Image (cartoon, rainbow, N blue to C red; front, side):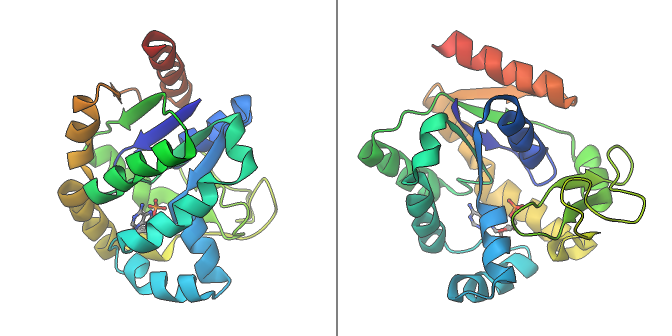
Length: 217
Ligand code: AMP
């Protein structure tokens, strides 16, 4: 499958992308994971992105499009992919349209994970992420806790709260979502590509995505 996962921070895009990867090899392409890995490695790109990420702002579109063009040219995308956290603005969506034409890739579906704000706030406050840049497994203190010593059950690295998950940065990220990313719902609805999913259970969301793709084919 070749899909976009759309939704506010905490809507479950990363969890869903990782589940789809386990289920059938669909490659998770998360701009947030790529950026955090660049920040950890202190690359030029990471240094440029860090201040935006820490205050909950969006990294400039030109930087993101450079990352995506390089990523979508890698051979593993042939298996299928889910775009997690990209596009996040109308200009990014327009640039993605042009990039997909250039690379001769056709998207199957845009899945809009529609989760109530109170659930999102609770999830973000209790979310923990593996600190290993090449793992970044997602945990939740209530529903999916890390190992009892606070380490990742997958790779054993320490699990911590992301720096952009302080109360202040979370509010900022949600405002940015409402202002810049939510308009993408209308953008993809007009193209007839949108499926809005209000399920909470991850297996139900995965099934809804698969059914949505089957119906569109
Ligand atoms: P995420 O892990 O998707 O919540 O992303 C974490 C942070 O990385 C965001 O708050 C932004 O600062 C940055 N970021 C991730 N993806 C994008 C994108 N497509 N456009 C701009 N900034 C992004």
